[in-house]
Image: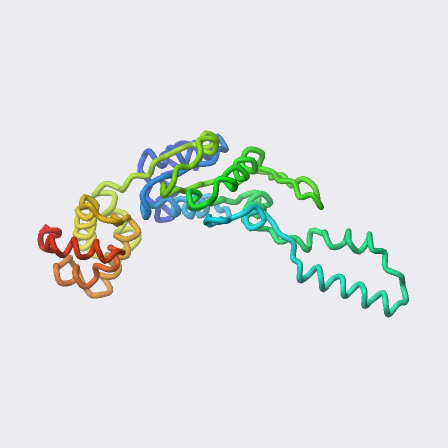
Amino acid sequence: MTESPTTLAAALAETGYLADEGLATAAWLALRLHRPLFLEGDAGVGKTSLADALAAATGGALVRLQCYEGLDASQALYDWDFPRQLLHVRAVEAAASVDGERLDAAQVEAALYDRRFLLARPLLQALENPASVLLVDEIDRADDEFEAFLLEVLSESAITIPELGRVAAVTPPVVVLTSNRTREVHDALKRRCLYHWVEHPSYEREVAILRTRLPDVTLRLAEDVARATRKLRELDLLKPPGVAEAIDWASALHALGARELHPDLAAASLGTVLKYREDGERVRELTLEALLG
């Protein structure tokens, strides 16, 4: 699979993910050079799905860290299982009272920080799993402080747990970071990664994606949906539809029994591809007949 970008693209295609030449090359280089892959692009263009496909193609476990404002190291790395620690203390106390033994406070405290009481969060899970694919999704939603912390973890592929010592990855995980560019990610993190901007697919590739993901959909319906979705992206919409929305639209139309895209069915199912009222009103003002050609 790592012989060339072409072989990687073929392996991804077997999982149902159709990568273009640029994306396949970026992913191949990330695998060969053991570098994180930073993907930017509009929402719904397939950034997250690439990590899923890489995990399926390599046979590794997908470990996902969903970023959000306020995310801190303990939520991403590890935490201690306080309820289990408390139960352990009570069990030790109960056993000591039965046996009439005197508790050694230092020994009891040391036992509380055993590995069995450690809750591994996504970053630690990925470091401990030799064949994992770590997806850091929507890093642009996290805070600057978390970016700096993540940079340190990715640079060393290791973390230090004060109570247990250093935990280093035997084999660094494949790392995919995604961003919808709601804010600019710092250059320091980008420099650590290979960068690729994920474009919307060409018309022919989008038809192929729809046919691959929805094999029961007719070729005519897939072509109509791909053509209409491309026209929607050319409009000044609040949220232009991505590939994910095109798949949802084609799936909804197929469920309605459509074999091709008619204006009445397009109007009835417009909520699967447009997510803002203003966008729906703008498209209806332009008339769906004009949109569908």
